[in-house]
Image: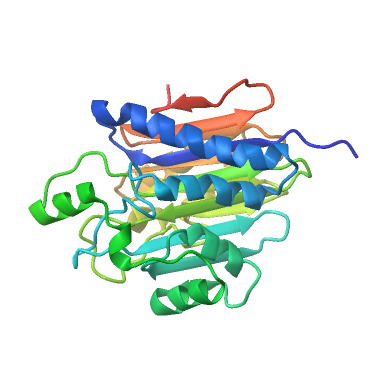
Length: 294
């Protein structure tokens, strides 16, 4: 059996990107893609690549995931993340956890467990027991986010969620998401990112999707699964656009999604002003980067 050509695509969130943040958004997504691509080039799995890419975004304060996440009403960072394996439909997720440096790593560990979704202290305890990198809850608060929270500043360019989808040489797909939620959210609020079907979906037979945007709008239209279902009959670009149009026609809210099909074709769409995206495949010498769909 001939190997499949690997592909990886990441997004940095559906949002408005101010001029002074364009370079940081592009550089961050490019670094994430490069980390995931290094895994794929060495024959690593799609799930490994997705985790590697999202870990980079979770350390970059440009993005609303891990360090640099938005602060909730109490001035604390609570993070959600999920990952799904398209070969087996295995999935794992954490929500409303504090002091976990890489929530995507905890989510991936939970793919091998039952239950698959742990929240708050249970998720934090699991991360600690698994030997994952933990920190004080204050360590995930960036200076910029703290000042914005304290001053209740009107912020244009805070993304909702970061995500990644990948196809490996064995033809396996995976999708992942990670987020710090929304600015000033009540303690314990959980959006779409940790929910299979809404924030992400992966099925080797059809494709893989990661979404971003207003969780309360994404969940009722099951955005990721809506995009995957459209992918059965359409090119990923058309399927992504149809999913966003479905959301807009039924509920109010901004959202975006990235898609990959089993052939490695890429698609994405958003109704926010901007959405930072980067992707890489064997036909490119370096990652292609965008801040909005042309």
